[in-house]
Length: 75
Image (cartoon, rainbow, N blue to C red; front, side, top):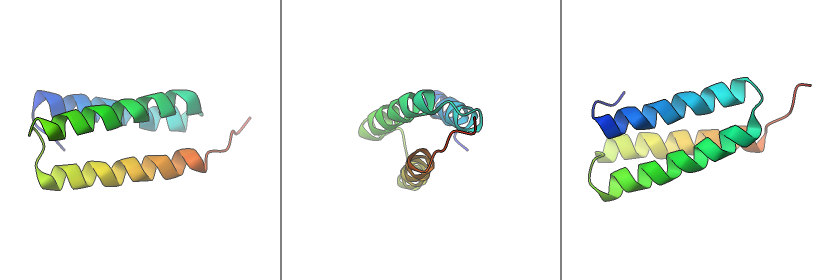
């Protein structure tokens, strides 16, 4: 998806959120989502992200927010 070191860091956080949600770790998913928001805004402010990448990340963040909002424990 992304190429630079910062972008790879963002991908790492995205993967972790997906793992957290898959394993019913809502608190961790929320924490990592906040981290993703902060890192995305920092990368955008420093000009490391292209507008298309920023739009993709914002869409993904919205998707994660919806998933967390609709989160139901399975145990």
